Each structure stands twice: as C-alpha cells, then as structure tokens.
Length: 421
Image (cartoon, rainbow, N blue to C red):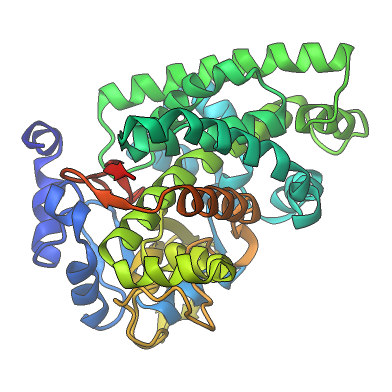
C-alpha cells in the first residue's frame, strides 16, 4: 500500500486530513469504512474533498436529491464547451487513451439527456424481470455444477473459486460471448473499472486502455458472427437496433462493453460482502435457513448494508440551489451511496444487518436517470446462488483472514476463505 500512496502523496494526505480514518487507499478503511462515513455525515453542508476537486454528499437525503435532479449530469460535455471538456479530461488523466475515450468515456453511463435515454431504451427490454427470468435455468445449472465441484473440497475461497466466475458467465451468456472467455473478460473489466477510482496511475492507465482495445476486438468479432447468423442474445438484438437507426455502431460496442463492465464486478463484490454479513451475523443466517422465503429481502439488505459501488460523481449543468446551498454551474459532486445507506436519518439501526428489513429503499443501485440497469439480474444471481449454497451446505464458516478492496470505486472482499460442511 505504501507504493500506491507514493504515487499521489498529497491526495492521500489531504483525504486523511479531511476526516480521521478517511483514507480509501488504507486496508483498515477498506475493511471498515463506516466510522469515517459517519464522521462525514456529521459535517455541515457538503464538504470539499481535496484532490477530488468536488463536494462530498454523504447523507441519504443529499445523495438522493443530487442523483434524482436532471440538472445534475455525469459528463461535463452536457454543459461545457469542448475546450473546457478537454481541459477537464486532461486534468483527470483521461486523455491519450484512444479506445478508452471512444468506447468507455462515451458509454451510456457517462452521457446524459436524450442520448442517454435513447441508448437505455434500446437495451432495457433485455433487462426486465420477465426477460431475465429466462436465465434462471442457466444460472441454476451453472451454480449447481460449480457446487458439485467445490463442496467436496471442504475449504474454498468464495471469491476466487465461485463468486468471481458467476457474473461473467451469466452476462456472457446474455450477450452471446464464448463461455471460455468469461474469466478473461472479468480481468479486463476490473482493469477498465479500476481506472475510475481517485488514484489513477500510469500503470492503471495503460492497463485500462489495453483492456478496452481487447474488449473492442472481441465484441467486433462477435458482431461479425451475429450479423451473419443471429441468435437469441443481446448482440443480435443490438444489431437489429443498429439497423433501425436507433444507435450507431460505436454506441453498440460501447453499450455492450459497459454492460460487461458494470454488471460483473459489482455483483462479485456484493456476493462476497453479502456472504460475509451472513457469516458474522449467524442469527441472520439461521433465520434465512429456517425461512428461505426471506431470500429476496435478505438480498436487498445485502446491497444496503455494504453497497458494492460506494461512490459516483455528478456535475451541476447550470447554476442551481440544492441541499440548502447555491452552487455555480460546473460544480462537481461526489455521491457516497455506501454512506447514505447507513444514514440513521433514513434507516432504523442502520449498522445492524437485518434480513427482514422493510421498507428498504436503499441507494445501492443509484436512483434517477442513471439508476442501475442490471439490478434485477444482480438480484437473480444472488438469490439463486445463496439459495443453493444454504440448501446444500449445513455448515458454512469463515476459515481465514478476509481481504477487502481498497479505493472508493468498489467495496467488497478480494479473498473470503470459507469452510463448507
């Protein structure tokens, strides 16, 4: 970790000075960020985070208000002239990345207004509960085969041996990629997504650009194959939308790439943090075993309790008043969804893991125009995996130290050793 801090010493030092314990690069924060988030919520207004060059919203009401407001946008291109957009791009070290700039920085996640709504509309039919229900058999079969192989081992790393593989297999099946490519796509997605964290090193930049190029090549080959012989998969549907003029070819590749990026990592993280919550709250695991009908609310609580995507940003596209203050156009805001989900003003006993919690209107999927498109798929994966795991293993216990991801961009264990009986 010391090497990472030396890359940006001023940034790390300024973040630690903002709130004691608020150092996203520190393993202690990664394991237990909640006291630092509580201290942030206690500060008045929306404090400025040095190094991020923006104001931090950590309370539920503030985060929700900013996320819901269409005057708040993801990209400076929605309000700033091209030269200012370029200046911000260079300041954030998002320049000199031809593939990343073409397919990641212009994805559905990074644009606003009518273009965002148009792209979202093109893929939305594939992510309804009804459409995703057709994946239940595939997911159930994959999970069953995986558990057949893993349970006899007795001891596994839940992340490396199981959770890290499921989302990639499911999303790849949905899109139409070769199942054998799922592990490699997971690595590429990690390399692309990690570059959105605050600490952007030259090495991370190179990996993100190369991963984007390789993703493009893979999806272009799949495009060519499905153009010649369509199937019942997302690539074939998107080719049809392209033919109807609903999106350009670059938008097609970018949108599918973003679904891969956004859908796999966050699901892996919440699978890990969800199981960890059950393991350290054995009364809740026993309750879930006794009443499997609680699985949907249990999954909902897993997302609230430890949001897998803790942090996103917005810009004010115009002069505005929000959260009790006036802000000029161009003001940058950081939204701490993970902190908002532990706000005692929004949730009773927010630090208690309660699988019966109702209502549970959390912000782990975001809200407003950019609410997570794949939230139903993530829930389906979790419900099937945890149902099978609890049915087939009468005893599940921690069996070694848990290692957690550092940074603000994601939260979840990278290693979760467990014993299965």
